[in-house]
Image 1 (cartoon, rainbow, N blue to C red):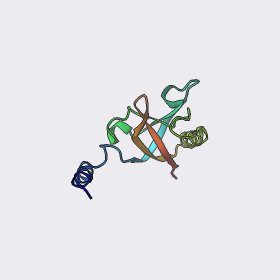
Image 2 (cartoon, rainbow, N blue to C red):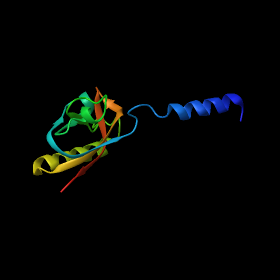
Image 3 (spheres, rainbow, N blue to C red):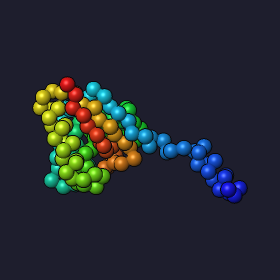
Image 4 (cartoon, rainbow, N blue to C red):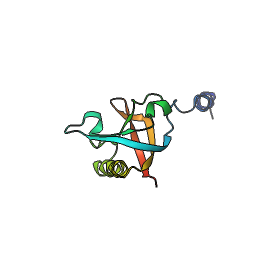
Length: 119
């Protein structure tokens, strides 16, 4: 390994991943509201949570998360299935667990990569 390659590898190890790059799990939240838009504003569909995502992950918008029903950050089918889970939780007063990341966003709202409806 050349000196340059060794220096570059060492620098990359010391720097590590960007801040906030790791997904964060929000546990035991309630879905307060869901929203679907006729256009792709904020990803086309969102959920408002009882636990503010902005308090758990810097860079996330307040209260709301996006499922990206526009298909930009996941497939439309997967996004609508996640929205279905949020609607199920809202209608039945169930808690959810969501995994969010601030690496993928729509207009500052963090993307949900997973949603679990809890008993």
